[in-house]
Length: 339
Ligand SMILES: Cc1ncc(COP(=O)(O)O)c(C=O)c1O
Image 1 (tube, rainbow, N blue to C red):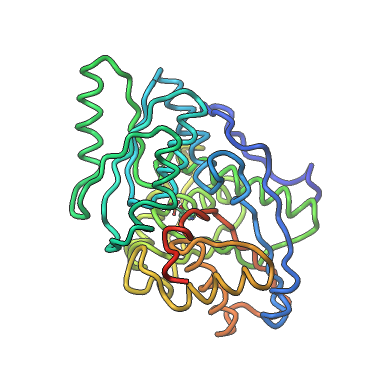
Image 2: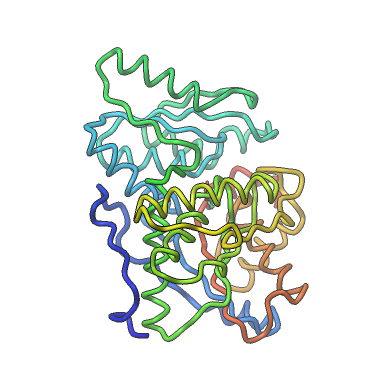
């Protein structure tokens, strides 16, 4: 298959505001591959998106900000944990398009040190000019966001509320588009991947990729998600639901089957945002063999899953594994004491 003959996805009917510079590179990691006994590891560098420190959420934000602009919004509100990368990138994208931005951030992760509370993403949120609402872990952030939106609308503002992780079907279109990008790049390089490994948080990236491959007429079951948020059953059900909603947004006739969503909960550990030994080892391994940085909450745990899958011979020598690097570097500074 050449790049011209790779199947294409037409998303032109959806409003979109460009935030990426273009396709992100796919790179082979020879030293890591040798270290892992001959499994060929490649990385899709979605951490290299330029705006706001980069990361996977910019793909979703292209469609979310596009939708917000199309309805005439002047303000965006989103929700997340205190060290949310999605919140940081929403604040950066808002600055880029001239929106006001409010972030409803909960203390859902039980960490109380000054790095977690004041460094990393939260420092950048402030630099991007966002207003932060600091809520306890038990709070319903989305409900707070909707009430705040009502207040602002009463003052004449036009407000767009964006869900957890930017993972509405509209946001997931960003990763459906990424499925087409990976397909075009792999056909141009003459590569085929046995697995595409992703972290699964709010499930939108995984769902969008699966919806994209289904829309391209390809089998999506080679996407392997490592959940970092809920257990496998919860992550499967959320991801399947989002994948179906996204696929139907692209084409009302599309359907995603349950067995297209593969979730492994082996790296979740005690819970969301709580470090594990295998995450720490995975972050160090990629940094020390290839000079590449993972974040402790998402990529670190998913990469630990890749390493474990090689150790347990689920991934074999000679296979091509593509790991999607999703950014989140500021999180390393928030979790300084863990390393
Ligand atoms: C760095 C990083 N990687 C991966 C993810 C997971 O993406 P999703 O929430 O779409 O599952 C996130 C979500 O916040 C993230 O910030």
